Amino acid sequence: MPNTPADSSFNFQVNLAGIIDILANHLYSEEKVFLRELLQNATDAITARQKIEDGFVGQVRLDLIPGDGDSPAQIIFEDNGVGLTEEEVHLFLSSIGSSSKKTVNEVTSREDFIGQFGIGLLSCFMITDEIVMVTRSAKGGSALEWRGNADGSYKIRQLDLELEPGTRVYLRQKAGVEKFFQAEFLRKLVKYYGDLLPFPIHFAEEATPLNAGDAPFMNDLVSSDELGRYGIEQFRTQFFDAVPLRTSDGTTRGVAYILPYAPNPAEKTTHKVYLKRMLISEKIDNVLPDWAFFVKCIINTGNLRPTASRESFYEDEYLKQTRQELGDALKNYLKGLAANRPDRMRQLISIHLATLKGLALHDDEFFDVIVDHLPFKTTYGEMLLPEVARQTDTLRHVPDLDEYRQLVGVASAQKQLVVCSGYLYDNQLVAKYGQRNRIPVQAVNTSHFIQHFEDLTVAEREATFDFLQQADAALHRFQCQAVLRKFEPANVPTIYYMDDRTNFNRSIKKSREIATDTFASMLDSLSGSVPSVSNSQLCLNYRHPLIQRLAAKTGDLKLEIEILYVQALLLGHHPLNNDELDILSNGLLQLMDR
Ligand SMILES: Nc1ncnc2c1ncn2[C@@H]1O[C@H](COP(=O)(O)OP(=O)(O)OP(=O)(O)O)[C@@H](O)[C@H]1O
Image (cartoon, rainbow, N blue to C red; front, side, top):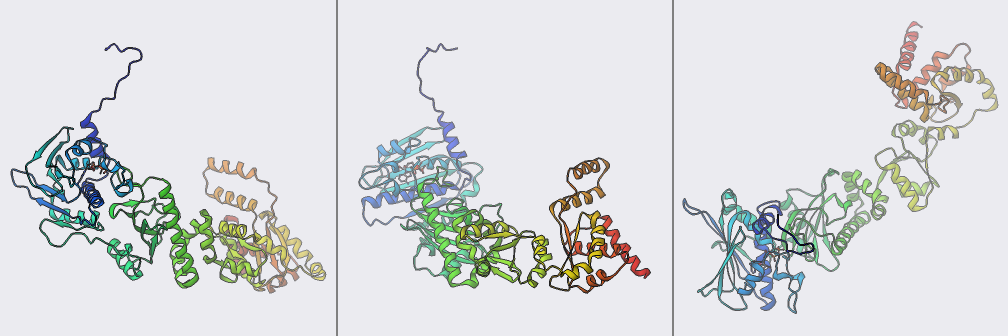
């Protein structure tokens, strides 16, 4: 054991080969990014040269020397950028984490370049064991050869060659990465990462560059047809629409494609993002607000800061501002669509209804943009909430779908405008609409309607007294009270209101019928804990001829009343338990006997 003095200090020891291995092989998710890093260095070198030579025209050439039996294949990647002096080679190329792009002076600033960490070149070690770079600085000096090894060693030598300024990188294939050394593969990869770069990238001696150097979304005057065609080309999808995006300072611009289908909300939509015209990643998910997951974007940005792996952006002020502004552009599009093309807005809503409703609930701003255009089922047919609000002083809604179905005919006949809020999010949306627009909102159920039905006259009440007594007694075992009222439509004989307690007890009874012994005793103790008093009501319609006839009859009407009760359950979409099914079958048998 070494004898360490009490308060001695040491420097960390760096295992160079280990660090290189981590950076080269574990920072990036895929090997192909080595080409992105080479393109990025070439772009930055050309930018740096343009800073000192006004109007300088950059270019890049990529070549592949196929392998033969003895020597492996080799990629040669060449740019006519600023190159490196000997001092710079030692300072930036041979020192991990050093980058010439951090240097700020009167001609360059940090924002001019894509690179910043001083590690990107190491990604080439994913496909080679040795990086050879031949460079000559535009600032003068002789040509140099630098050989960097994955074990952390490097060599430099001066070359006695009259080279034009620029840099050439040689990468000799290591075992197991043959696919990156195929001409076709490289061509595609260059197009993939560098299609928008503003200088030609040639393959070998080919006259036509591999990259287009531009894209329709970079052009302010682009037509939406052109954007649509670009969307098909990029994603093989005919989108619902293409929305041009642009931040106020113009540093980020692009296009948002509205998906022609409802996306899976569990999956985040990712976007294709270029940084200073170089493709960073297709999997960026934080450049748009969360609510915008019904669009897929392609954007080019000049000021967002990529992380070291370049697979996402730092959550900084620029990103927040950009996200806000791109979100605003989308909201403006939706507003414009609603104002000028309501038919298209309706189509968009019909595709993304659930998504838009869910988003509106969680984002107040978005809520205000969209809520006036969301269709709701009402007793007057499909309506928008502002239309409903114009026609009633209180926005009444039925939050239970089955209950709404039972009530719709009755409420329409009473000329009551009621919204169905039984579909996903509708209940909360109606409540939020009332809250934000200061309109009273009331959730109503069947009981509300029964209370407002017309009462019988005194004479009618006297004449039906016995019948009502009998009905009440017959319904007692179902924890239900009989009520006699007059309501429209006259062809509806009954309407049933089931309160929560009865509902709970009925579900327990239904489960009890199929439960094992142990589970049954648990259910018994549960049902014992609920008071048997309930407010459930079977409202009999005195306008219906059948009810009038029954009310006028004397004798035992238990079976008739029970059948009416079961019929009301069925109309209200309530599942029947065994007792109730028996009532139906007995009733039919007795009918046959008669
Ligand atoms: N083609 C090139 N022309 C001129 N200089 C280059 C070239 N490629 C690399 N360099 C120099 O080597 C340095 C290190 O490059 P590297 O790609 O590792 O990091 P970076 O580009 O600075 O930052 P990042 O890690 O963010 O890519 C650069 O800062 C630059 O000075």
